[in-house]
Length: 239
Length: 239
Image (cartoon, rainbow over the protein chains, first blue to last red):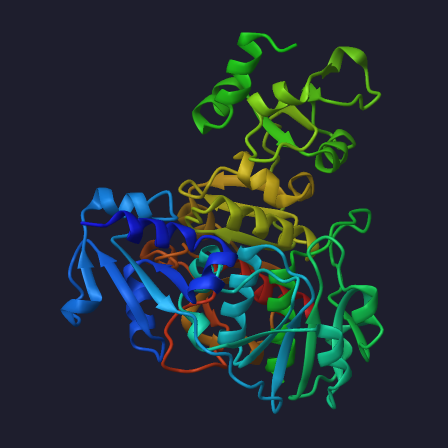
């Protein structure tokens, strides 16, 4: 059984304000929870319809209808876990870094975290305007990748100004990325879904790159930011 | 003002059954509607809060609250249009073709249609189990690309068996795509989100390809199907 105060705490974690106040975030789905349980993350409480065979004090067996009451999903997935938000780790500047300039959509952010994990990018830098990586929709889209990528929220212009490596920015009009020799070390900046890279950030970018369009030239739409990140990270890694 | 029968017709178009019965689909958002009005698609009716200055018999000016009643979006976007589902066009086999084996998620399908448009893929072949491309969520994700890509629903195994070009399939274990020389003409098969390419389809694939993983080898997650399609189409086109 769930107490009223437990339900209140859990449902409050949908909002960033309360995640920051309590220092907790929510994960749903057996597979992702199991992956996170094996990481360094600290479990606060697991609410599940079937036992995970972990320390009994950490686990509360609940009914399907209780799960439905606390779940953030339309179709709840057997279990929900509350983890402590980890302390931020220092940024390791020795490799390829992805920096996000005001990515607002949680699904895009989650997909980009998963791409960083796949392409071995250990550091993801987010401007303060970027969606919160502990938003349940982001966690859902990362499929567990969140534990393998170090995510830092910074003043992006200040961070980039302090960089000693080349800074690549993705633009509609930039140098054809297929013709560039890309370094192992550097920063790739991806801009906002609707407005692209902001003027202030553009001013500190050293190389403007672009994915050429092969389709009908009359069409003006850009690529979605997550699929553009996929293509660019592939270009950085393919060698 | 909207009549009861108009509201009933429009809201029924959320379901594939009624889209097929009536032969109509729904588009929301001023920008996408304007793009579709310039295409060969036949408008059935435009419901809008502000006039588009088109033929008065095609347009119904409605209130924001009426729009809210018929919209499929949480935040309706000024206008909704009903278009006729176009007649299927014959498949042009002269270029690069993308084939989808049971892609279920409308967002993924919409993103893949947009990618086809960007990378100049004119033909998208879908197995019968793939999401319906006239689903409002798909249309939303395509951002107008739906008019530039010819989408056909076929028995995928039969279609592939009849192909005279090489058939590439995306697998977790396949040949490193960065080491392959890819042709201008061929078929790229992408598999279902959870289960990948089905056994029956795999049997007719001539080349298994794979995007190498650069991150932590212990992690077993695959790339999302839309981001994997982005990387593979980029590889086919970059030359």
